[in-house]
Image (cartoon, rainbow, N blue to C red; front, side, top):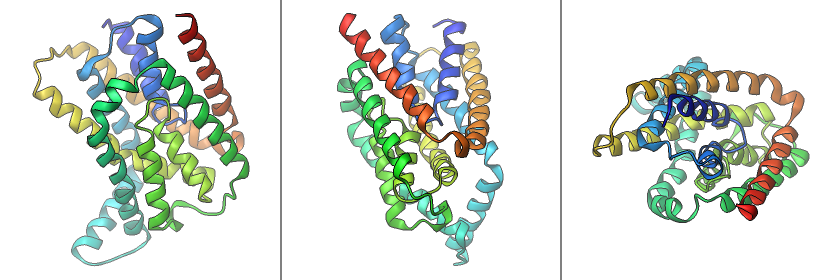
Length: 267
């Protein structure tokens, strides 16, 4: 893989990881449509590191507050709204971890195709549109309960299917449960920290146990580019979401899905 391809794929990863349009779909499509070779395990680790650093640094105050409150709840039995939110994020992470380990091989073998991506991109895009139009927008993430966190966690597990979008699924579920758009996005982004950390660690372990060659220049481009793109994406998404809603992303998903179907028919 060339440096140019590394830059483009890292840019795609950074821009799409936190938008409700599926980063996995966009990383699969260049190989399916343009004939680019698979980015490989080492590159996957690099872009996970970049996007993880972006969300942790952007939400550094919230992360420190949640961690402090969580440790306080564990060792000193002190509970507040931050410790509650921290526990809810942990709970919401469990379904994707369990199903990811159980279904990883199945997903790799049967679900990473342009046809699957096209179908899930369209269906979950329409679901996002419907929920965004009918949501009540009544609560923030600190008002959530364990049942709501579990439902959002199950939605995150659904995003193991390429084209679904992790952020799209979690934001859709949160909106359905009555979250405001901003609260749904924040909860989704905070949920991404443990799941990206675990996924990156898993991929890193696989990389360490393999004999895959590591190109440091390619990895550096991947980390830096995905970090910058993800950080800017989070910032502007949170600034604009209350004004523009989800409709632009729904329209994009529909166009992308139709494009995938057309490519699948004529390729």
